[in-house]
Length: 197
Image 1 (cartoon, rainbow, N blue to C red):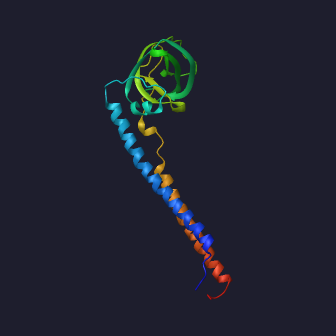
Image 2: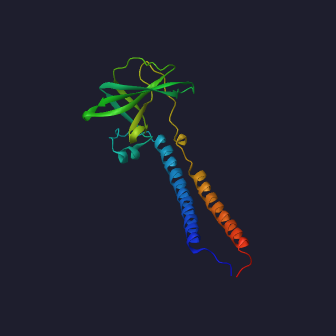
Image 3: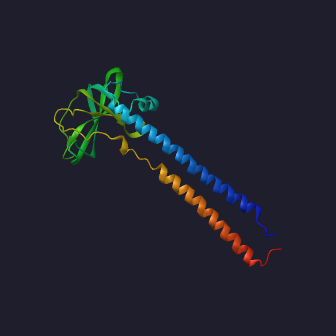
């Protein structure tokens, strides 16, 4: 019989099974992401307002794409980011850190301008949609925009990256390639050693 190296074969089989497992995991993540996006779409259609979440990621996740409102008592840390307006024109959206009730803070995207400079705005009542922001925080996209700004483009849950199917295909492909390469390596080994013993 042709001899198969035990250690290298076990290692290759373990690697292939790991890659297949990662592919299956990515398929599970795909289903989870699709369900999550469907939840976000339903949340956007819900007109009932919810309190703006604290910095707790679980609280934030529970209310993403729901309507909310805050009273911005003071503003600081303006951040101008490339973005689009409600007419799909390129420009800048402006996010400001607001002091709100309860000695808390909230990031508020107050609106859009064509250039990076923003009009002066010292705060007030803002309502809009809660969306994700950096470092696990939430951001309130003003809808309507505050005075002096144009409306930002409405958030779209489908813009959230969903590459899990592509990742799954890659892992299954890697597993298949590893199997083929190892089979070819064994074949070459047997040929070099001559006829089976």
